[in-house]
Length: 547
Image (cartoon, rainbow, N blue to C red; front, side, top):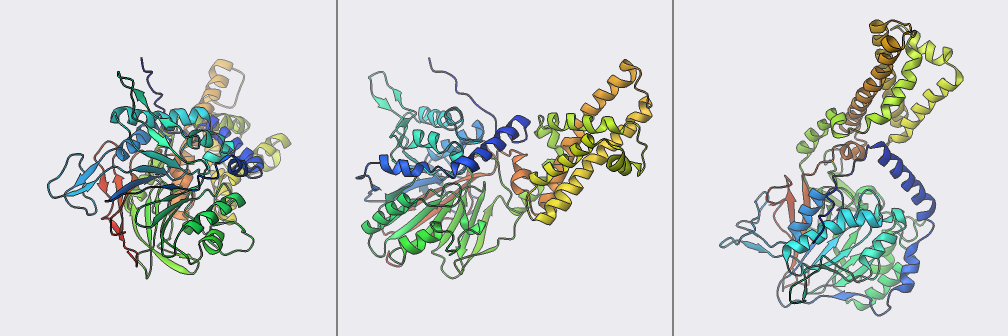
């Protein structure tokens, strides 16, 4: 009898336990992960004759791309299920709903020969259990529903996959495993996703002189020497004029890392300059890491496209927080053409931070004892500016140390420029909490007086009031801080939306290589999780010069 899969909710990033675990994982990753590079050991164990995997097709060749999976069951299972289905549309233009049944005279989008997961396959961090429950479980469920072989499965690691040194990722994706197989009564094995890569990076030879390179940039946008040697060997197998698709874990063109900086020895610039050179042309660059859809097109050459498609199931990232309408990549200008969801939708979703305590019910357990600790020293302070004197002068050194530590903690939590972190992230944010504690203490003084002699009638009610008030007010102020930070100061885009855990507005790409060498990209979006998918925009057509 099959066991019921574990259907985990989306990660509660503001659960104090998760905050502690995440902080420890980042610390360990910084101290160890970036200094011990398992990719070098991986290169020694990979079979030397498996330089690349080749696909061939007499007619159209289809494949899928999706990034940032493995968060909540509902969103991840839904998106993986969409990639396992054929889709049809009467009119291939923006906003048109895709149908699972054939449409007369319409466009047919069959499921791909393989699915490439473009980074951050698992949240919050890599482990055998998290992979099993948050990624392999949904993959297995999709395969069981399909009842037949799904397709090949590839993946490149993102920063969350690297948090355990890449151990769990390599176990899942580089050992030729099948995921989701089942036995039929006659003994046949059907269903499943077949993994085929032997490294965390790889090259695929596609039909019509198209190639796909999947690059692993680890945690520091760095390419190890064995990886550089691997792609140098692959480029020798390619012919001048071949067409290249490059998949990377982070959209370097948006993060400002695509620089010809001699100090960045083996970054993407090194790969493009010293490995690819002018032998082949990169027509399409794909990435995840940002959990939305965003496309930039070369200002003068529409055949060069850069696409973020990080909508595989993780919480949504905003699309209204930056001014990246144009970006410079090695002196070339790329212009933003489309994003999903639209900026207006993203802006209004931000206001869900006003119900931060409802969306993040465990966060108040962190602020409640802090309010109690600070508030207990405010019980005899009148509602006046004596508060500042009381805090700065009259408090014992230990209490003052806690206050300073609190402000320092908020400074290190904040992101952005130093002036913002110091003035708004620490001083204003911390003072908002201090005023809330002050107001709460003053209110309790009016309700119960200043005497603490009666445990049941004065002391215990104050204790409970500080805990309840700290639980609610602390979370409300945090939500308001994130709202203002994003919409006014254009920072905390990750923190403001991880708090919301939005399941909707997901996406993936379905790509087609036609017999004449033309590449078509169909961006598929899901505005509401359990509604039919739509085309985010009409298919992008990339027709190489020598097609």
